Image 1 (tube, rainbow, N blue to C red):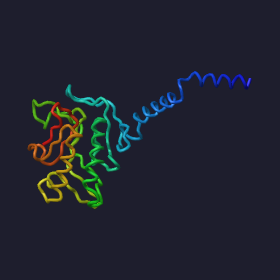
Image 2: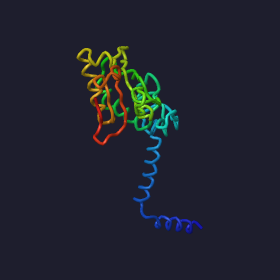
Image 3: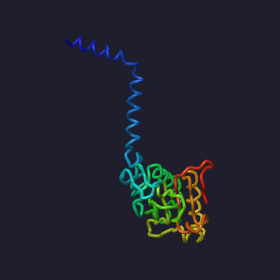
Image 4: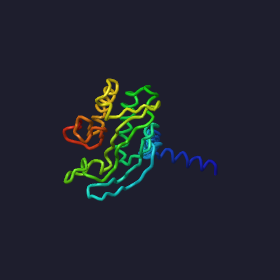
Length: 212
């Protein structure tokens, strides 16, 4: 009996297409699992929060198919939970990791909080009657108005953009390096509606990112 079982096992192994193919299949399954969970919100360990699923809107063009509520990025809390889609959440995480954290560095003990001015809201652009639905109404946008440092100092877009040299340089770097990862980047020099915050969204345009 033992010999028969051994022979059957050997036969089964020989029938397989080869060890490489078996390992590759297991790897693909493992990667698929990691991509869907990834140890964090949206499969990204840099993001903390919760899934909220479909978010309906009062206007036909509003809503999010698979929304999430982000509470912190790279361990840095948001001043209010931001309801956005996963693409926007991951793009925000890229900007925080690649631009914001290095730009601020150790100043004031580093960034302790990101002040969110707006996230999902079913509305038109700049609240203007007759305008197209804002990217905020699709879960693709987040507005950031300030950074709070570990020592309690607050760097605001409204005061810092035209303030002292150090804040001006920092805020212009935060604004400039968001252009590309985000499809739209608006700040104080764009129009009267963005004097006190940065608007970031993940809309895509044929001509590339729109940054002002």
